[in-house]
Figure 1: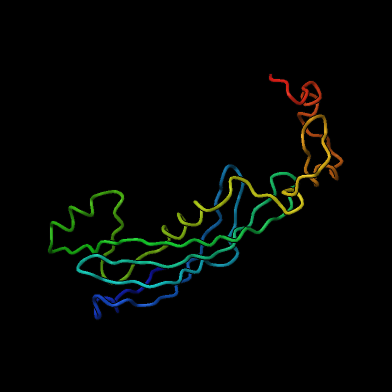
Figure 2: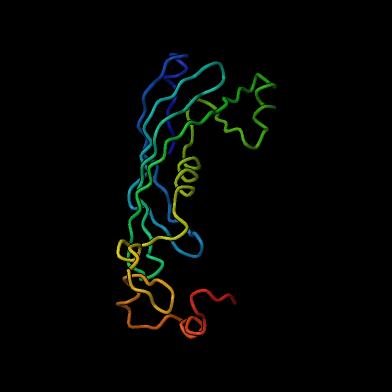
Length: 175
């Protein structure tokens, strides 16, 4: 989806508030599928000065994945402030086109900005390396052969695949 910034061309130099919803498709991250049941909401303002559009605001979305330990479904709220600069591509100005050739410079043509890639990038960079449910993130006070166990691991009837190796080691021993 795109954000209509035509108002900025009518009122250059003035901040204009916006609210934009951007659906994020499921993402495969480290072999796990992360879903986003609701669209990401981006709220803030934009301002046009010359051929530069300044976009500032906050992104909010909820990611859903599986706990890395017990595989229960976990919701993870993502909330990220952003401040981005977009360069308006003017077909008449070669100088603007050359500046846009820089891979890191975000650009737009016309009076609309596609925010799909920005929403995806902001969201994925804020996700944890692995999802953990509340019971798994609370470490227990008991120790199992020198290593702390998680609450869900105690309840799981399956034995950890590396438990035989774990029993060979002591707390302060190196491999």
